[in-house]
Length: 125
Image (cartoon, rainbow, N blue to C red; front, side):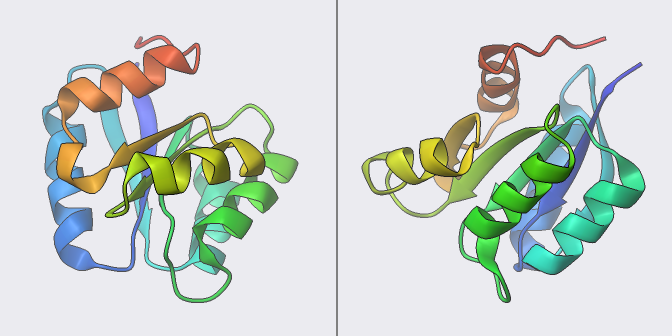
């Protein structure tokens, strides 16, 4: 059984790239996608993914607030924030909202995905 991943980003090109990375990474599978913070909350409730890749800058409530709400509803979920911003700009925000890690979009890869999952205490099945 694979780690089910919800990809949340308002830009289709990044969702497509993330989908390709998740699909190519052994032990991971795409559970679904969302383009807004509100959709991410709905999809998390419906799909119950183990891992959520959450863009920081989303239309609507935004990735940070969506992360807070998701972790309130589903405390066992692992949320990894993604953004074009530097880690220095996002690191404290990730910790404050309960996200497990931050990955810069430019560095998103199979390796960074598996490292973030492992650092959060997850194991591929």
